[in-house]
Image (cartoon, rainbow, N blue to C red):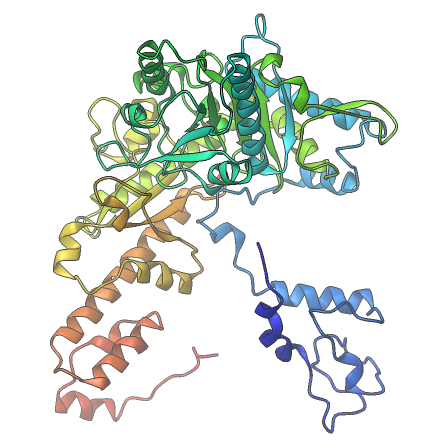
Length: 567
């Protein structure tokens, strides 16, 4: 994130202790442990935006930083994030033991580099690579964002090579992606001088790429298509098979183009792990996505985030190219900087190696069955959550679910019971384990003054972090609508999901009561507004009960109030 110096000037004054009349040994100043001795409280004064001239004791700083970080949210309840928050005991030991190893230093840490190579080989096979025909290659990156940059840059250089060979201009390259893309894809276009052609989505095609719209965007200067295997908005898998078919037809009608075989880069930031482990070949074929990886002739590269559903600590991504030919020699560097000779293609150089060790550890300890078990549970919980929103008697009619994971493959119907999702998981649509939902049109027509965003705000009172955001740019106006989204990582068990459903119901109930209370009050009734806002700031809706009668008021005078529950 970018921060300006002016952003923090006003904040500085909050981190200076007052020094008037406080000398000796003042307790309670954060930096001071019990019984510490200082000549003056001035010694405890720090400017948190300037490196101190004299360092502080490590124990004091540890306590200061630890206390400040208590203000952060609970990672487990951060349901906005795809990033893994669980590390087991033995993985943590490996991380601690290898914390200082540099992944860029091939000569010093050869076994670390070996593990890196093994992970790339495992991923290539996982992503439908034909090891008899192709020689896959790849590298670890700092998340999918860097991987996207590398994949896009490799396609741009390939396009330039084709156009130069035909003596044609290379001045106006473009790349195509749906408006449901993550911002990293757009960053590639901006940073590397490529025109970004965003294809708007629509409700009919599930808020992700409609391949038939490519006719309006593809031309001879198209370096490639970013196809998203699991959009962050709704979790849908964009259809690589259909994109390939449309590109075949477009190129067949433009035989004069020098740029043939327009490639596909698969953004599998989340789906790169979920799809091969969680869904059967039959299930993917029924969904029309049998060839989602390197088995499709147009797919030249795939990226994923190890720190999402690869289940590593944050900071790891991967990119693999189908074959050596798709990464031109002019993009590779041979370095002798750290002792040995190494070939590299990265935006970063030195970086921690422990995430790669964590990934290798996960591959060995979980195996295919372990990953399937974890993902199958997450997908079941996501489907159960969606089912409860739609079918629970208390919730029915309040929400609409715009993600598709809970829908039957054959007819898009919702399951008759939760048991169906557990017993027959392969009968339902594949996707990322998340649920994107919004207030129903019926609810909004009955309660037009209730903003959906307040649900997200009120859920934070219970610790839940759930984003509310607009849908991607569309052709049918659906981008004016907002959705709430819950990501179901592996630590989100069914009991927690049901607690969340309960909390959502209670929030909605509170909002309805508040709405009804205001609608029956007189205009400009400031007391009514105060009462509603007070109610929304706590967990009770009892304050919105009808005004008590005179006899009830008389009885309350003789009731003793118990404040032991207040602390």
